[in-house]
Length: 429
Ligand SMILES: NC(=O)C1=CN([C@@H]2O[C@H](COP(=O)(O)OP(=O)(O)OC[C@H]3O[C@@H](n4cnc5c(N)ncnc54)[C@H](OP(=O)(O)O)[C@@H]3O)[C@@H](O)[C@H]2O)C=CC1
Ligand SMILES: N[C@@H](CC=O)C(=O)O
Ligand code: NA
Image (cartoon, rainbow, N blue to C red; front, side, top):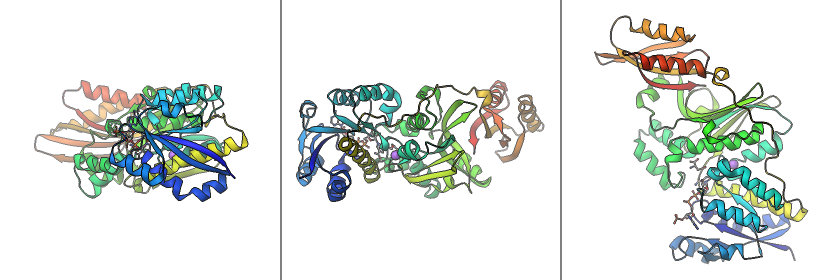
């Protein structure tokens, strides 16, 4: 008879609700691979009379509880999968699970990005496993790839589409001409968005993921405050259109880059050339692009959100822990790469930029724009006077590669100018 491995799930929402069916469907394969019979014994829910939990519990034969103590006090439960989301009570539940010697799986990027080191420390002390593959890029096994396959490589830059909701929205808005509200509401009903979608649309969810990717790629612990983040709320239809005319697609990208031993990370709308593989990543799909000295360029593509893909990632953590339990090798951190954290100054972060300004439709305005940009040492790659309503003209510029500090100087001088109004500025890939 095979050893029994008993688990519990906290939360039966989009992700948690997908776990019981996967466990059932792949029972035989999981048993062969892990040498164990994995059994879901209990699920913590807010209301155990609700239709979804009742139906799942009946179909897959597990117990429902509204009391976390029922899980923590159950000595048979060896693994707890936290799929509630947010900081509290998820943080307390994970801490208490680890402190009582239970291994933990979570999909919670908010928590790992902000309290990861604290939780990892407790897991280490307790010789417990703590895995969180689903926290970054949903169904793409990106964390496992970096922490296993790319160890003997040196990542220089990691960037891409790491939020499914906003990519879904941008796709719907561009291709189906949906409104922002319609696109968001559809992403919510499909289970892609966070329970409060502010984090999705304001780039905060992507920033959490970049904190985690920075830990895995560069061994550095940056905080979410170190990341400049801009979401898609302020994105204007005219920017999307003019970007198209210039040969670009606007995508919400997260990026982290190593420059001379220090790291910089950003989240924001970026003009991606139409020929770049990231430009064709549509809907809730994610794409993570890695530049590294060994492999060179590689891209990891797949669904970034949704029940089945994300629950499959949770299951991959479960299989890893089951194998570790059998081999008695639990207690090793998911990411063991660690080096001193240094942040790159704005003077050393380089990019091309898209800048859109509005000026009175008068002679000499282009000259004024040019003068202010030249003062900051900025030269143009492309310039386009896009439209005029008789009174005002819209001028769009793509700069040559400049530093973030130079871009800040240009923004300040435009702000100080009475005639030039800065409308948008985005990085160009
Ligand atoms: N959805 C996705 O595609 C992805 C999600 N994630 C992450 O996975 C986690 C779960 O997300 P998701 O499934 O979408 O979220 P949902 O909101 O769909 O699910 C969370 C569930 O937890 C329940 N819950 C809340 N508080 C408690 C509590 N105190 N005790 C028991 N249950 C509770 C909620 O109940 P109620 O609804 O009644 O509040 C809900 O059923 C989050 O960390 C999210 O960031 C990661 C990758 C992709
Ligand atoms: N809300 C998130 C879910 C996955 O992390 C997203 O849309 O990417
Ligand atoms: Na993942």
